[in-house]
Image 1 (cartoon, one colour):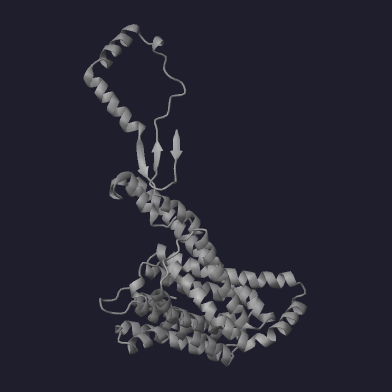
Image 2 (cartoon, rainbow, N blue to C red):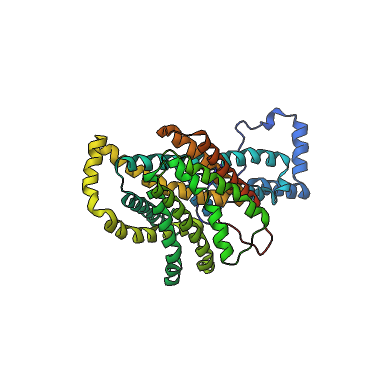
Length: 417
């Protein structure tokens, strides 16, 4: 009998099953039966038999209730770190589990890693496609960006209320510490959305790949030091972005500046977070992002009403007339909002499951996948020099992630966007 109890401080218990077809002792040789009975009557035999039954009838493996909650909180299922914990629960250490268990765990870990990146990339592609679809017929990025933050806020509130995600303890000092990072996050998000509304998605992502340049420059002004190889790694980023900009078919200064300001906003968010949130390290990344999203919505929506609120009604009717079916427009807007939060949530979960270097490489490849996907979907014309510039810029971000992966103590450590 196998009983699985997922309540707190419960155990997975394996009991010794009964044989379906027990051996009938009357079929054995009577002399052997009598000899066996005499042997069983010895005190030493009875003690050994009792010990055997005890060791086989109550084999317990610890299984805490937190494992069950992670199934519901994470769309990927268990974290890849849990695999080693399960092995240790059985054998005491990974080495004691034997080579067979380690060989069996490696394909599972590889599959989990592929699933993490697959979902992360898929959600990012869906967001970029439907975000651009909406902006093509409803060019009001301030309202759309506000709605996306609203979707993320509602999503996190549902997770906290249903206890699928533990809600952090909120204090006045915590909210005050978040005001700066949330403001810069708001600037980064709305600027990117404005850029998406003005130029091709691929061009915005090429310019956003220059974020490491701003990170190195700003951090250096604040006293951080970087080795020469880091400075050299940002040169191809600058050259590639410049080449892509001057050869971009859909070039627009508003789109260019939007993407550049977005880089500044997200870099300042990361720098400011390191300084203001040092006393709140017990708050995990997903909860931190949830509260930043809520505060960002509070920042952005009033400004959005002031900037473009008078045009929303007329723009809505024009969008409905263009698309023909109101439900299609609603679905596009809702998908862009939900997948905006999902891909950010997945990125935090991916960072929790993999190393920072793997995350950096994955984030670089994510831009490549998004650029190629959006070019294919929207049929954007790409000149050879534009493609070359984009490739050089992406290569530069990869070199930067490699250069900053092993830094001496005392030097800045990047938090990747």
